[in-house]
Image (cartoon, rainbow, N blue to C red; front, side):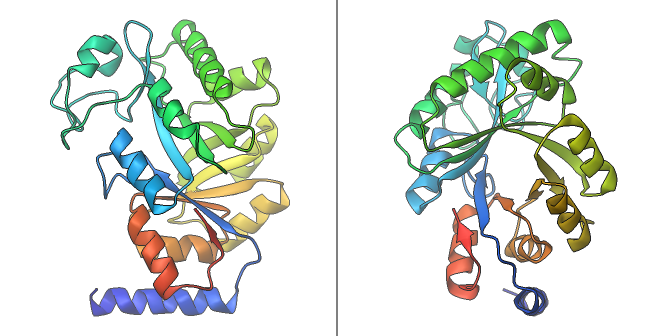
Length: 273
């Protein structure tokens, strides 16, 4: 660790210690820890679980033949040895591919089976939709299918959250399943406009970028009854910044590094994994 990084961490530590928060921070493994493992694979999720994580985030798409699969990107090139658009492939074609780490892509059902025996889960299921690949006539059956699969497999003690940056899917879930737990993702820092939007939509959770987010914005969100999840989670500096800002939830692409740092360098943090 270089001197500049050490200085940054010390400064964040001092700032946080001076304004120590009461709430516990829930840290969850983003795509299974994409900067430490082969993202969105069973092996990645298992490695995070073996380390003690019970908080996860993943992404859901649908194949041409109607099977829900776990994948972040619409195109296959970045993460696999395949080419083209995932939504244009059949499950058989998807299962024939290898990820860049030499593993297989998994279906939503396989991910849910992995989760089933774990206790105290917090899981964010992101609806990876866009108007071009998911026009309304395709979007609504897809969202309903995701909802039914997830909720049918939900353990009694789990928090299962449906997330998206596409308002359409969240609105559909609100209308059809009013008790559903939703989180609105924004690529912007948390601000008054996003807080007002969440309140207007009746959504009680927001996920925003920590860069540019202020402690005041997080406090205002809390006053409005919103739980705040911040990203990205690329470094332990992000962990300390998110804690200082007062986040309720933090994603991490480095789950093992986060856990080790919190235990060894910041034991005063109240963290739940």
